Amino acid sequence: MAVVVDTSVLYALVDAADAWHGRAAAALAQEVEAVIVPQATLPEVCYLIGSRMNAHREADFVRLLAESEWRLEPLTDADLPRVAALMHEYADARIGFVDACVVAIAERIGAVRVYTLDVRHFGMIRPAHVDRFELKPGSL
Image (cartoon, rainbow, N blue to C red; front, side, top):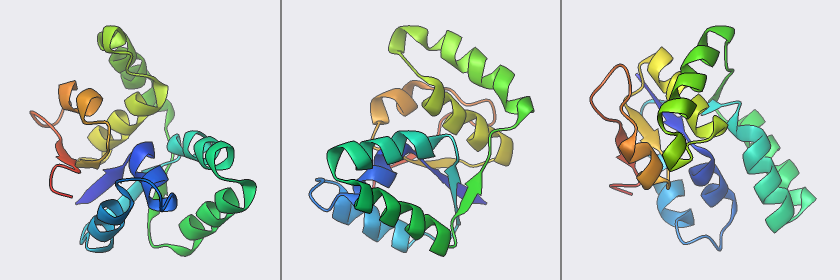
């Protein structure tokens, strides 16, 4: 099995001043399942790191990913109809493209756990393969 990581947790890992930094880092360091990073999160998290910190921290994040055992998971052509359906279904809640990609990838690979600080959005989404996602930081 695997776990999927959302932008918010990736950002918290990089920003030591983030309130969730220590808890997110400790939880992922202890994760026994494969950690999946949807490629769709990378532009968003890199933008946040670069604009809130600096370009060196952004490059450090990319190096961290390259040196980690985490697996980047691309969005496939087959994921796009599900992404669009999620965006339409949850349009009132403003579920955007990246969050919908995280969900579609989690569904495709059968992941039940999603690491996210966006509990409001991910908590309302009903995935196709389970009743609900198990959301971390619930226990971070």
